[in-house]
Length: 289
Image (cartoon, rainbow, N blue to C red; front, top):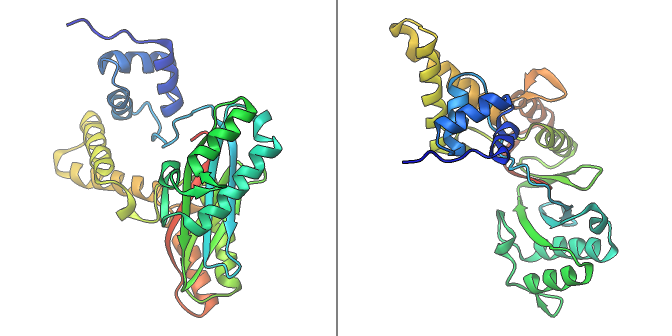
């Protein structure tokens, strides 16, 4: 069977995903017969690649818009995409994005979903999907409602973060005593999540196949390092624990003070609030990811 030809585009994509060098990426793709996931794993096993991020590195433009209820218990966020930043600054595009965020606050299902989750809902005398197409026709550019999220927390609040360029937003579901300690923690967590892009709140939010992959990579790395058989298991466990800490919100060092973890930050806020504050879930949208 003829090996699959490796294109420059494939090499560039793998480089973007892993941060590895061009020749290493090309060799890994050849070894994996063009399979991007396998090639990434090969690079990780060799210790060449960094931990792969979830971004697909698309070149989309657009806006992230957040809408919050007056009582702070409910918030929604949408990501509306277009082809150029020129259209992203268009009045019709901005008005549509703001209206969609208000609609999501009232009608979107709980959690984070693809935009298709609300495309069929009534909107502006038509549907969400048809309205997006109509505005797309006016601007002359392809347009898509990529993602929508809605979080509700009656026993605390949903705090938000929106980056100054309106292209990165975060919603955080915090359960606990309402007050400045909770809202202040929410502000800090919003900035942290925006910056550090955790996979989830804790270990249970990491997919089982992702953890299995990391364990497999760690086992091969330890074998290649020639560590004694008797201690390999403990070293592998340590590497997996390190991965979990680096990719989960509560395990990460706080972005503004790496001497404390986010879990410790939450604990301090709980003490200030006079009762436990728990981070239940969050949603993070960045245009182009």
